[in-house]
Image 1 (cartoon, rainbow, N blue to C red):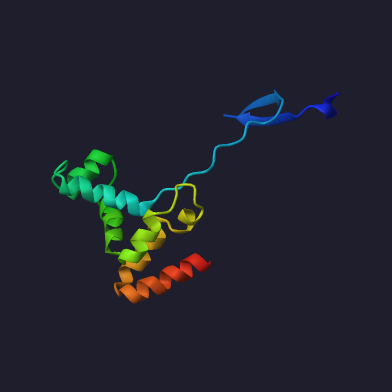
Image 2: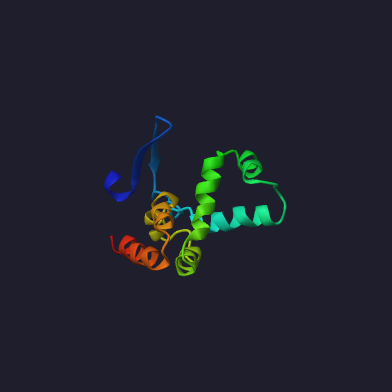
Length: 124
């Protein structure tokens, strides 16, 4: 009899669960688009919604360093920013193109070098 139905066993908050029937499909995983966030932070500053980066950090509940790190992504080559901004939230490339990894591109400064390193990130 049990061979004819789907049985799903698992845990939720350390409590065992047992379901009979097909397991509900998981929603697609979404990834954070750091470049879109950087543009959003910048627009908040430009529109005067917050007065400074420190005010923005307080408003968001993050450190001033984090705000500065995210806003530094606006120093990326425009081609890189456009590519990342146009990615869908479910695109797995966003997992590779995290804010932390993109910071190293910002530090190299030269636009051509940024593009070369960016291409290498995508190949990996």
